[in-house]
Length: 483
Image 1: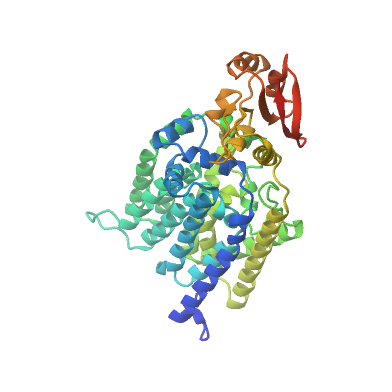
Image 2: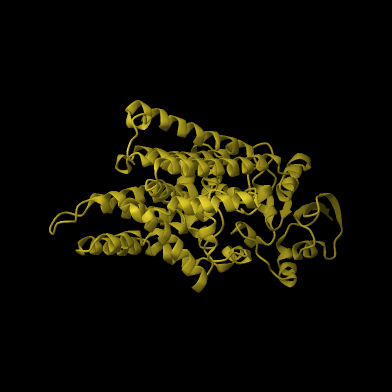
């Protein structure tokens, strides 16, 4: 990107001003969600699991899903301050680290400012920047890896006998850390090999890249072993999503038809406009070796995800995948735009930034207008009205919702029914009515309060041969006094 005579980015003061402005925009779109978004069930699960000792975290994950690194870090955070907000601040710190890393990457030249600005307004990266989940941590390690791999790829051809390239070593370590943060990170493990294959006619870098990928794969073998032991029921909800394996490509734009449970879907015209802008932005990729490198680093995990969906199982879920792939995508777009003339570059980049800003703001406003989740509503009502000395039997997702309401002033005994719900509260078991009737004998004798989803086997088992008085309900769940 050749500097114009009046280009402020050509000066140190201009670069600092641009970095501060981008950081201000970055925070302006995330701080409102930090406190304004209601805690949701996955965050409650994070708080429950991370509060366990390290060994118990590993044992619990064998009954659920995901690798352990994020929960280990969250455990340390909760030891200082046990709250959802504290875990959200951890995620915000990770994405700020990603932003600072890109802004400080001198090897990227001046495209780093545009890349950082794109990250600031990319809707999936906005939403998951302040979730008490592992996506932000995974994205940070991915950013470290792709910046280091770019340095490795841009270096001179390795000389026989020279020590291992430090950038390749850093990238390999970061990729392994990303995979232990979230399984999405494992989709990036082939990056060194992919870059080596396109960058090294002489073969030495190719061998180094393949070796790095193999080393990363070996180091992640414990993570693979854990994933194979985890029950398929824990991720059964993936199969409920009607998602084309090619949808990941269309969803990379800065506005999309997001799942309403996560973010307000962008209007159809804006989605189409965003896709046109995305295609235009990367159309000149072939004119820049750097753009080609970041295209490979973006599309390789996409290709792996698409292949797995076609052959094994669905691994891509809207917004979550894009949040992790955001760093290489933003740098790819910024590098490819360098191939356009200045007026077109400014027009396309400006359109992308405005599109992302509009879609992000629409999603933020929607979260402020949303009604309370029905399950959370019941748990809050239980805290408000029930005697803390009264035993509570809770079923399904309501067990974790009710447990999450407990504190020093409201700490009733909460018994999971069925008991296995307390062992893996991240997903809902579905035992038969006969099995529940047998397990009911282990519950305390009435009277007690039952809280759960309405018209389920759990409710039928609780009320068989007993009477129940409704205390409060909302159509999805409720509480009743069982006698």
